[in-house]
Amino acid sequence: MKKLLPFVLACLVASVFVFAEGAKETAAPQIDLKTATWDQIVQAAKAEGQVTFYAWYFPDYFKEASMDFEKQYGIKVNLVIGDQTANFNKAIAEKGNAVGTIDCMIVGGQWVKTTMDLDLFWGPVNKIMPDADKLAPTLWVVQEGVMTKGYLTPFHRNQTGILYDPDRVTNPPQTWEELTAWIDANPKKFGFNDPSKGGSGQSFVHTLIAYTTGGLKQYEGDSDLVQTKVANWDLAWKWVNDRKDNLTFTASNNDSITRLNDGELAMTVAWDDNVKDMMTKGNLFKRAKMYIPKMGLAGGGDTMGVLKNAPDKAAALLFINHITSKEQQVKKFQMLNAYPARVDIPIEGTLLTEEDRKTNAIPWFPAPYKSHMIAEFVKNVLMK
Image (cartoon, rainbow, N blue to C red):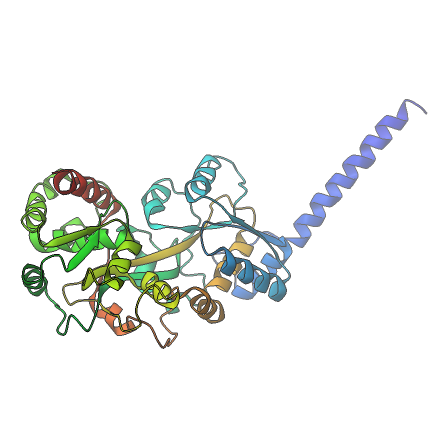
C-alpha cells in the first residue's frame, strides 16, 4: 500500500493538471480569428481574460483607457510603459518563441521597417477590425515609407506644417519658389531644427530633397537605399549652404516653436500636436497660425500591431479596437491634443483641417532614405 501511495498521488496531480488544461481549452476555444465574426472574437477575448500591451508614451491616457476597457469587457490589461528601444528589443528577442509575453504594442516610425522585415506581427488585420474603413486609409498601407499591408492599425496621426506669426507674415508662401523667395527676402526669420534632433526638421529637408532632386515618387516601394537615386542629393545641400546666412537652424522641435514665440523667427516648420501642446501650456502665443503649404510637408502617425506569437490575440484585437473607437479617439485628443486616426470625427479648434491634411500632406519616403538624409545633412551642411 505504501508503494502505491506515491503512484496514486502522482496520478491525482496529473489528473488535476489535465483538467485545468481542459478547462482552459473550454474557456478559451481556439477559433480562426480571420474568419470569425466580431462577436465571436469578443467572446474569445473574454475567455482569454487578459491582454498585455506595450507602449512608451501617453502613460496617463493609456492608464485611463485600460481602466475603461477593463470596466467594459471585464478583461485585465497588463499595461507596460517602457523605453521604446527596450520594448522592441524584447519583442524581437522573443520572436523565436512559440508563445511570447507581449500581445500588442505601439509601432513608431523608426521601427516599422525592422519589425516588418522580421515578420513580427500577425495579420493582416484590416479585414478584421470593424471600423477599419474609418481609420486613416494611407496609414493602413504605408508607414514611414514602408508598406505595412494592413498588418498595423492606425491609432494616432501627426502632421508637420508651417507655423507662423500672422502679425509678421501676411501672405504665407505656398510653393517652393515662394518659400525660397521669402527666405531670401527675410534673412534668419525662417528656421527649422537640425534633422538629427527632431522630425519637423526632417520634414523640411524631405520636401527640400523633393524639389531640388526630382521628386519623391522614385523612392516608392524601395526596401533598401538605392545609391543611384541619392547621387544628386548634393543639389539639396547646395541649396541650404547657399542660404546659410539666411536660414536659422534650431536645436529641436520645441526650440523652433520657442524661437517663434520669442520673436526671433517669423516662420518655422512644426508638428501640429506639438504646437497645440505648447499653445495650451502658454508657451506659444494664441495668434499663431499653421498650415500645410501646397508644396507639401510630411505627415504620418503611429500604429498598433498584434504580435505573431501573442498568447491573447483575440483580446489584443479587441483592445486595439477599443483604442481606435470614437470615444477613445476623442478622449485621447481631449487629454493630449493628439490628433485622431479616425477620419469620421469632426474636431473643432484644430490648427490643420482634415481637408488640409487630405490635400497637401505627403507621406515619408522609405526609412533607409530618411536615415541617409539625416546623416548626409549633418555631414554636408552642419559640419561644413
